[in-house]
Length: 142
Image (cartoon, rainbow, N blue to C red):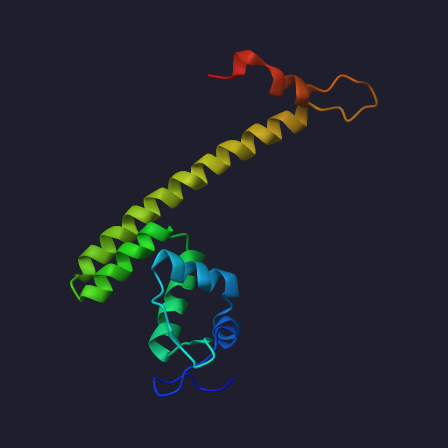
């Protein structure tokens, strides 16, 4: 893979290949404003630079660890303004971590409910199915 430099731009396909971000996703990030619009060639093709590569990598890594688009936007706005402290970033990260822990707890409850339903099932050839009975049970909703 050739080096990305500020002096020489690269097309969207090269950015996609280098970062692993789908071309349509890169275009989407441009539309919603978290990726700046790149320069264009005389033929109208996008030409990205090294700073844009770093930004796209940042977005991808942030998405991989579950930050929402709005959280990423907030982080990038702080970086773009050069108006942030490590404490602010830490606070956002701790809030995100708390959200992830809540989701994990919810998934554990879901796992327990599914295991209980599956344990009730005899897997027989009769039309009675305790799993469906549980799903249809109005006393369980609330």
